[in-house]
Image (cartoon, rainbow, N blue to C red; front, side, top):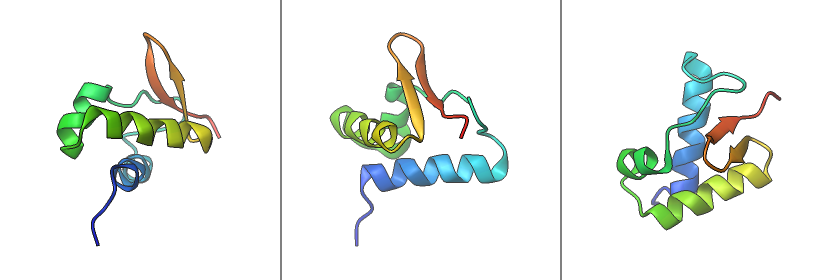
Length: 71
């Protein structure tokens, strides 16, 4: 079963919180960087980020980036 871009991005966030590289308020890599890391189309990365935002895991600020929520 293939992993979706959203699942891969969620795993990236979970792994970062586990190993301490990502904490509350941490800035996620740019969309461009995520496209390269996940080897996925930018549109898929954007949809995955939108899903994470809807679920309250991240907050996105135009021009500043995407950040983990404090919760």
